[in-house]
Length: 533
Image 1 (cartoon, rainbow, N blue to C red):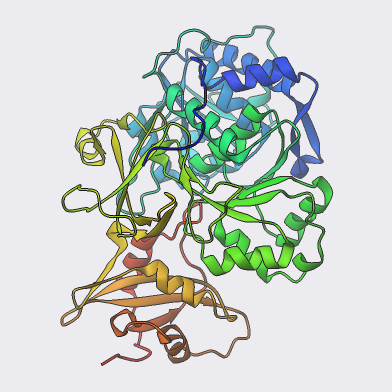
Image 2: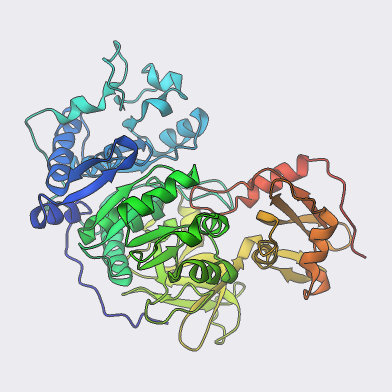
């Protein structure tokens, strides 16, 4: 199905164009507020000027067009300045997860052949060899205000004080010019570098701003990490293109402090993940708050349970929609239309975007209502995986991106994600979708979070096993959880065992890291709660 939305017009520009445009239109408007730094404010004019100053300093550090520069920071104005500054110097941004340790960082730097890194002092303290200058990089930049040691990191603020301004991205961008090299989440294998161009990302920004109706009158409360493609494009980038104000937060806990930001800054848009929405629904303060300024909430990054979608609206009166995408698609491909919300659906394709539902074995399209793999095509789809032609050939088929997600579409073209293709549990020859059982478990008042994986079985093939986080003081037993989940469900889908745990491993966007959970499950010695005959 091809998108029925009005085609967006995207200029032949670089990914830095939205900031230049916003600075020209609203030079004195507050673009960014940082509550965690005393409410510090930055205007669009200042962001444009300071990012160009940073670009000049990076050029003096011998960053050449096409060079990769790693960015290892939490959400902050320094992150935003670095993101645009690297591209203005002609470089390619390599976002690094702030959850990474030294070994994971070293791997990403090696794979991408990064020439330098801009990082927080907190992160660099986790990589002493890097901080001491033993990495082989041309430069290491730290946000520390301390004077640098000989051969140590360069203070970030010193790169903003020069009189020179540089923007090499103007007029030199081709359709295949790389802009950002993020890594896929690794939920179904080792992380791979995803080649996203200025063309890919700028198109997706225009698509997202159109679908979400972002305007200069909006205020976004941006808490998802900018190193993740969702936070980078849908939060940070869309705010800049829309000329909106963004309130930048680097965390959402303690949750009372985070909720106070809604009361102080009165955001009009909130893009988040289901896990945070779930915590809101359980918090006693939320029903008594004034939510009138918030136009709607958009969730992405992980499946949203229909019950949770409806519950938040019942509590607050605020509509909840879903969006969908992948790192490989910059990321957004689908968004629920605001004028026709269907609970449980990720919506319809964005402007200039097509989708089809195909049989995974044959690639042939299935009938309306039947389940198959979701394939998407559009200008936001990556050019491929970095230095991995085999993985690229498997994922990109004649311009179509194989998402690896199973879904179905209704007669209006709305798509419903069923589960991940590779995460399906094969039990007695039947396919069991973990997300289906997880949604049931999350309906129990004592279960705060849950994940379901497959466990190999000599007779059944695989059996579903649940990991659950329960409320403090709960007296619920594993047997009771099994019985609760079994109600109204086919016998082959019934849980084989339940394991109580302190936390479910998730990616920064909220996706369950099933590979990590399976690896720890293999090592764990647990007693089955009950065996199903």
